[in-house]
Length: 86
Image 1 (cartoon, one colour):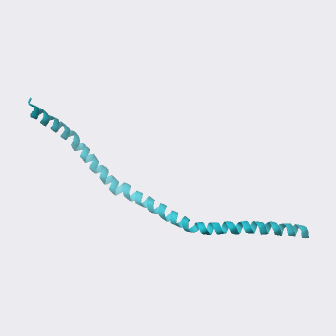
Image 2 (tube, helix red, strand yellow; image 1 turned 180 degrees about the vertical axis):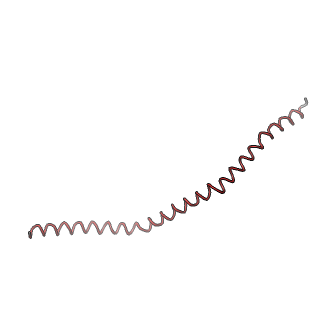
């Protein structure tokens, strides 16, 4: 066998082994495009909307926490006064 014939035989062997891989890669691309990417986009959308909702509520939560601390002090003072009266 000549060098060219050996190279041609090797090329044919490699080609026959690469063809099924090309098909598998095509299936994987379709799965990614049709299944995985839409799901990731949905997850991202949910995460982003939840983050924005919590981010806008942080100031309100901080204000409520301050109000609760003040209410605790006032309630404790009123309890002391009521105990002294009773």
